[in-house]
Length: 312
Image (cartoon, rainbow, N blue to C red; front, top):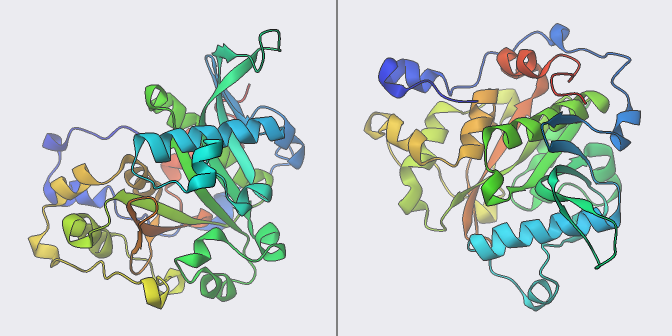
């Protein structure tokens, strides 16, 4: 996912690298028999000592929640309530119904007790919520900020997947950890025949004028076609069109955007209409919309049409 050095590209070409790819014909999307739900309990990929797979136990989910607490509340600026402080875990009701994607380091083992069994350390996580599960349990987490249901209703024949609660332990914020997380997501997409990925992505800060250039860059360069437009809920809507396109320093805006959002843009993601300030987490959220059929073909080719690039 590394970028070419910006000095080798004109400003127009540089920005174009981050504009969502044109919609591809869905014909390239495989439905291989080898990619089955059975893989949910097995490894989804491995690079050296790092492995990506779904959580297999309550203990592993708790460890993922502890990792989220460390990153969101101790390293970043999220505000913990009394229960969160007491448990030192980032917990909400959605943890019960989601699948939890994990990156584990088998060279960094830990024990639960002095004579307990050694376990690989959980160093990265993503939370995954499928549409059919959300529908049985009150809807998507993202619906509190964006009108997701309108998008789902507009595409009744497609399967949606919500991505959320992404974090990686600081020493592991490297290319190979991100590669494994996305390899795991791609395997999961194939496993469950997902058609659309959605989710919130965060920019640090709760004052929209302080991040105006980033918001405006996303507004002008990653707006979806009409059929994929999603608006922030009215009572939380923050206008992203805070600067004219000609006033934006594209290079600086890209430099300032969080790596996760830049990664989504490279994949071909669209950005929803309006942002939402999340004061608990000290962020301003934007909505990511990624139709699988519109993903950048380089991404599909890189991880393999059957998600076998890093298969273990």
